[in-house]
Length: 511
Image (cartoon, one colour):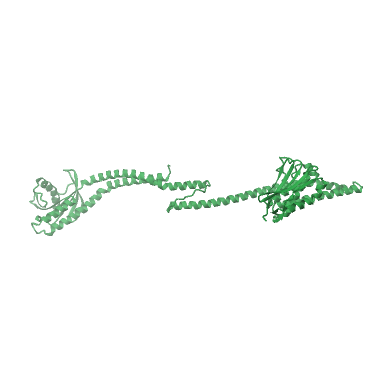
């Protein structure tokens, strides 16, 4: 990747190595020669001091330099420091200088003697003031005992550092060190540094490639975990055991992931609760509107009847006592219907909104069934309806006895209102594991499929004309549904070839 940390690390290291190599070359070119000259000056000065001490140790002895140990000491100084060392005395006839070399013995080498004489003449003449040094002599350092020069030798086209100083009044010390090799050394050193630098850059880049990959691998892993967290996937965790900055960052991301997951879970729960509250409010608003609409519709007919007959009585429409009694009976009957409907609506409202909690207790459901059926016995006889009731052994359940009695009453009342002429109503129980199902079946017409899911709604009527005949208002089954919901139990309806079966279930109580 163009902007990856690994790429930048490799680039930074490469630039650093290149700059380091170039800086070394520049430093060599700019300062190495001067530094070499400075160090060489110190060496020449130190050698001079040692030779000076040797010469001054016994300067009155004429044969001092013929001693073998003195010769070897001077020879060792010259050889070990890579320079030419001359100790000589001088005499002059006013025209020529004559040199008596005490070290080394150059008289035997005619050519060397001639060359060194030419070189020494310049310094001796300058020392005694006979003539000045030429332009190729550059003074570097000078004190009361010696002077150091940088000299360019035209004969061999080479540079030297030369020291000329006194040992005593007539004895001089001459040191000569090659300065030309420092330029060659700088050139060789720069080539070597360049070569090593190129290798270092290549090796460093390759090494940094692999090192950078190891460094960036955990970073990429953490980036992947962060991406998953951004997509609300909190299962990804950093599980490497590292006791460094990456390890601490990974652990911090794990903690953040857990906290984010908990926070989002709480937010979802709060959001779901809010959504349910909104839906519940919307349902309440819809139920309120439906309630008002249905109540208005259901009360319209009895109110109109009561108003009409009351106005008839007020206007003395009929003087016949029987007609007046009929008017009064209609008003009383319709007011009773209105009173009964209002009570049932209030009861349903309490059930739906949980205003009253069920009073759970243990009781025999068979006895409750018998009680409700007995209360409706006269209705069976008046309508010539056959009752089939299967009386099993006692079955104990956990429920609210009053509410269960209300459910049974609604089921049997509904069966009486919809059973066919000279039909049959059956009441029976059946156990299913830990529950018992109580069913009320009536012969007659089936409920249409498009209506079977809506019969539990308030004021819904399948056959409005028939419902009007028996004074129904479509609330009974809504009450049943609300009661069973409050008891956390199930209820339902089944069409069969002979009629319709309404059922509900209750938890069985273990003896």
